[in-house]
Structure formats: structure tokens, C-alpha cells
Length: 201
Image (cartoon, rainbow, N blue to C red; front, side, top):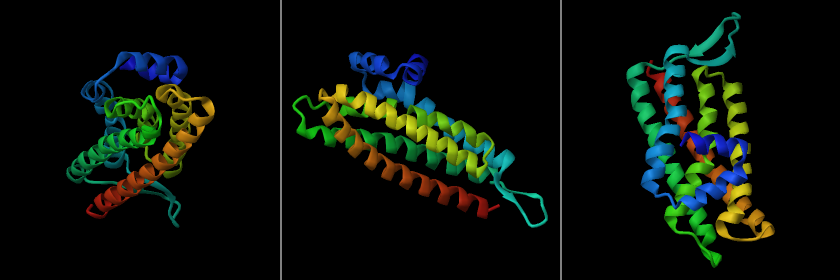
């Protein structure tokens, strides 16, 4: 698992070829990659929101405004957040499978979910910054994670689907557009969840 993470961050083209040659199952992917890395933003958010609190700038008195979530509430929210992330990976695998329907070498749904799971690696890792949840810092990390995820998508999808670069750019653009919509929905639900948790304190 760690080898693929490092490889995707440092030499993605070679790593995609290695991942494709493994014929990994969805259960193995979730057990050795997704379940572990998806816990990064969840655990970091739990620690950040309960021990540090969301930092929204300074108040009129010049003091820092921080909003914390009670640990009992944060546990429930973290479980829901974790479930949403796991579902989003599965959904994006189905999106890739649907986009591949017009190509002769259409991969199986299993392989498409595996592809989506590894593609999301930078987004998982960007969740580390929520240990110290400053709004602008979390947004910046999320944007960087999204940009590198897009790079992995554009680098890996053409060879994954067995199509040329031009067709790959079109397919990648469509997958990215749908992925951004999924991400926006996930972020909206996350904000609602943690805002609800903060209102219970």
C-alpha cells in the first residue's frame, strides 16, 4: 500500500502500469488502501475539531474565534463522514465504468473501482491539514489535492481504458467534471455535519 502511495506521488505513470498489472480486487483495495487512507481526513478532522476547534479568524475583540465539537458528537459525525468517503470512491468507480462503456477494451467495474481508489490518494492525504483546522488552509490543501488527483486521472485513464491521448483527455475531462460534483456534494454534507456538531456544543 505505502509503495503505491509513494509511487503515485513521485512517478505516477510507472505506478499506474504496475497497478494495472496486479489485477487487484475491490476487497483488497479497500482493505489495504482505501480504508486506511480514508481514515486520514476523518481522524485528523476529529482531533482538530475536538481539541483545537475550527479557526474562523479573529473576533471584534481581537481574539481568535474557535468552534469546537464535543467528542461524543464528533465520533458520530466522523463515522458518517468516513462512510461518505468510502461511498464516494465506489461512486467514482461506477462513473469511470460508465464512461468506459463506449470503448472496446472496457474494464470491469472491479477494475474501475480500483482505479478510482488509487486516483483519490492525494485527496485523502490533503486531509492531514485538518489537524489544525484553519478554513483557508484546509481549502488550499483541498485545492492542491484536487489538482494532483486530476493529474493522476489525466495521466492514468488513457492507458487504463486503452485509448489514445486525445480521446483520453475527453474521457478524463468528463470524469473530472463528475468527480468535482461528487466532491462538492461531499464537502457540502461535511460542512453541514460539522456545523451541526458545533451547534450542539
